[in-house]
Length: 213
Image 1 (cartoon, rainbow, N blue to C red):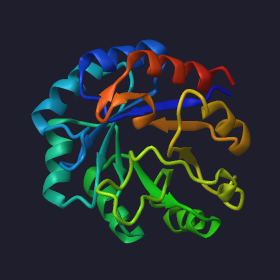
Image 2: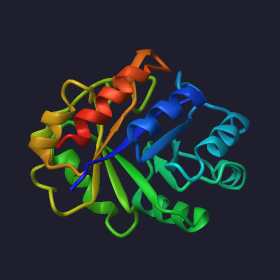
Image 3: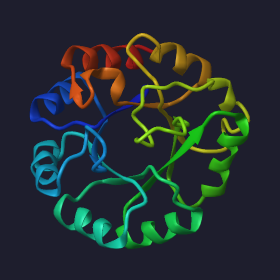
């Protein structure tokens, strides 16, 4: 089994080309203004055209209103919507119906009990993204470069389809995969030279480490 890799928060064609050339399966575009990785609809449209047919496009939204969802679907045309806010299971179902594409729901984890919240989304989200719970004073709901105790996923392993995120880097991703058995991993800040600035060498190193397993 080859591990699938998602590189999130890309903003340039150069970073996209580096990720895809290295074997990225998913490219994430962030629609969340406080984030240094945020892109406008028009920027995302151009990036999506550059990606098209080479990797799956994931649009990351945080507690989005229907109007934004419709606009992203119409103008960007992602393959997957990633919901990274406090969306309830019912809201996820509503968004899935509205968008008509698969939903990836982020679950913020600190403890095993946190991880078990993912079970509430079975049948509503196709993929769960386990991410580290952000500090209370954090501006961003994700992309903070924090890892969580991977043992927290033991009680849900085999019960949900998931992608592992949160504090992954080229140096620790192999260990994370070995310990959790994750079949897919996601990275953003772990392959950056500065907030929002992707480093092509780190992207290549991360994907190589993940897929070597």
